[in-house]
Image (cartoon, rainbow, N blue to C red; front, side, top):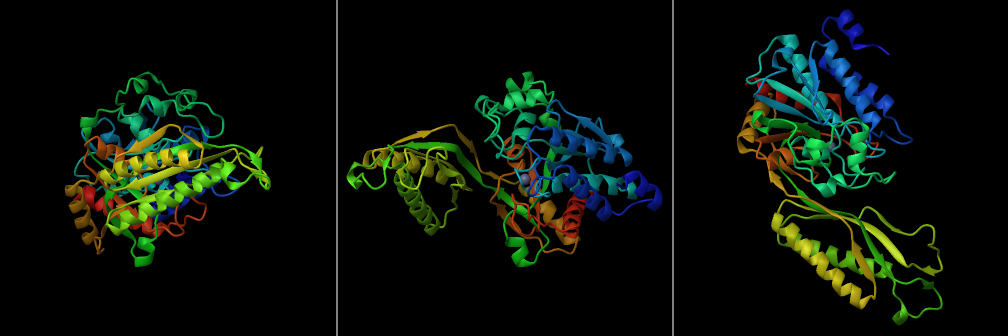
Length: 426
Ligand SMILES: [Zn+2]
């Protein structure tokens, strides 16, 4: 493997493109899974990713520090102890068998900004720190934005008690196991002086198709959808012979779930017909594999619900609708629903001044400044929720996200990096 040191020595100053390409290639190599890549939240692979970035950044003469949540913060040496700074970054974990660019792209963009400032000796308007956050993806424990919630002291007790999808151990245990002192986190104390953060800027791959379809490399995010999510809802009925039990005697949880999803889908359409915003997904849906059979009426079905909107009123309306529907179906279908822990995150708007500043930076880079809302959630939502001025840049990405086919192009990453660099040095 060519080290950055070799590259620096042979080439004097390697291009940002070659640095970015090397980082994605090296990190993918040690986070490869049977399909795609897996960087679990609060795992050894996540730690390895941060240590890899640390040594690469140190080769470029940058300073790397860790906060009490063991997120890495990178800066020019003269800004390492700055008490007021712009914070740039994203997360390094991924979903199971996901793509290599979701999250990592934002960290790499921040690092490239620092390297460029150093190589070209261009000063930032304010000191800049780049943060490589842990644990953003909800796929591992249920709650999302864990690293940034811990950093800003807003993680809840319920979230810390949530269990890992594979081993059933709590988030709190997993965090302790990688050496994080949980005392301040359990006490909901911020791990950073929040008033020292002038602004938070995050670059992220777009997880939908808009930029690709419009043939644009980048856009500015105006808002981030909020959500409420149930990792597991159980619907229990009664097992029986699929041939012998007449309809009126059945307590079939799958039929109850079919009714529920159909009613939620109709309500979704009504909301869209009123020009309001909603998306709804039941991504996990299963009868018990140890018992289910072709000829058996199932006795239980377990499913997840992920409901998102830019409008907090629509989120609470949907939540109420869900509960009412469940009560009705318990009577008509003679089943019992058990709603386990709900995770919810409010929608947030990006800071107007930053949106204007990023628009100017896009124009300065000969780009058309377009703006749209983010369907997916991001660490930025936590910073904005803490009233820290927050902005986001989306970059074009092919084949969607949370899957191995994510296919961001390095050139588009460089366009996004250039927008942020222009903004930070304007
Ligand atoms: Zn992400």
